[in-house]
Length: 433
Image (cartoon, rainbow, N blue to C red):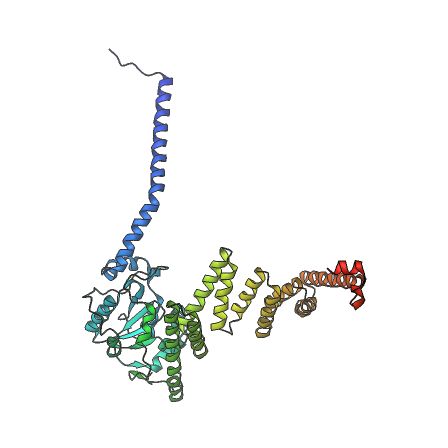
C-alpha cells in the first residue's frame, strides 16, 4: 500500500496551523518576559543592595567596577595624580559601609602601607593615600599642566587649596574617632566600589556627615608637605590659606550634620559661612549642584514652590550666584509674582549688566506687572545693543500703545467725588455702599 499524499489544501492548513502555534508561542514568551522583567529587576536590585551593604562589597563588585570605568570616581585619579601616590590611592563610598567596615578598611590600608591619610572629596566620597612627604612645588606644576588639570576639574579640584581642603587627617588622628567602634574584621581590598546613586545609607552605616568629627578644631599645617621648588612667598600664602579652607570644610560638614537633624536654619548658616571663606570648596559645589538638580526636578512635576525653596536656599548660601538669582526670578514669574520677580531680575541686572537674558525677563515681568516705565527702559537699553531687532521693536511698540490707551482711559474716567457732601445724596450713598 502506498501512503496517501495530503492534498494541497490540507498542506496549506497544516502550515498555517504551525505558523499560528509558532507566533502564539513567541507572543506568550514575550508576554512572560515583559511580566517578569520588573520582578527580575527587583530581584537584581535586591541582590545588589545586599551585596553593597554586606562584607562582600569590595570583593564582589570590583569586577563590575572594572567592566564599567564610569563607575570609578574621578577623585581617586585626581588625588593620586596630584600627590604622586601612583596606584596606591583607594576610594571609599561611605553609603555602602558600616562604621565597623570603615574602621576595618582603614586598618587594612594601614597594615599594607604603614599608615594612611584620609581625604574627603565629596559628601559621600573618601580617599585613602599612603604616608610620605609631598613636594608642594610638584603639586603646583601638576595643576598648571593643561592635560592633568582636566582630571582635577572632573573632581572639582581647581586649585591646591581645594585639594588640601579635602584633607581630614592621618592615621593617629583618625583612629581616635573610631576608638569606641569594634573592628568588623578583615575586608579584601579593591581599587574602588561600585557607585550607587540615589540610595539611602543602610542601617548602622557611617553617615557622610560624621566626617565632621574627624576635623580637629586646632588646624595645623601638615608637616609632611614640603615647599620644594615652590616660591617661598607663594608657599607662605598657601600656608595662610590652608587654615581658611580647613575651617570652611569643617563648617560645610557641620552644615550637613545640622541638615540631617532637621535644623535647616543652622545648616544654612554654616554653609553660608563656609561659602564666604572658600566658595570653591568641592563639597559646597556638590551642594549647589544638588540644589539646582532638585529645583529642576520640582519644576518637571509642576511644583514651583519646591523649586522656589531650593533656589532660595542656594541664594542664601551663595548670594553672588547670578544664575541662581535668575532662576529664582523665573520661578517667581511662573508662580505669578511678577512684581517680586521684577526686583529679583533687577538684582541680576545690577550684578551682571552685560547679560541680555536678565533684562529681557525684567522687561517681560515689568510689562505684566503694570510697570511700563521699567520695561521701556530695559528695552531701550537692549535696542542700543541690538538696533533694529524686530522682536524688541515689536515689544516696545506694544508697551507704548498699551500705555497710551491706559492714559486715555484715565482721562475719560469720571472724577471721583471725595467731598463730605457725597453722603447726603441718596444715589451716591447707595453707590458708596
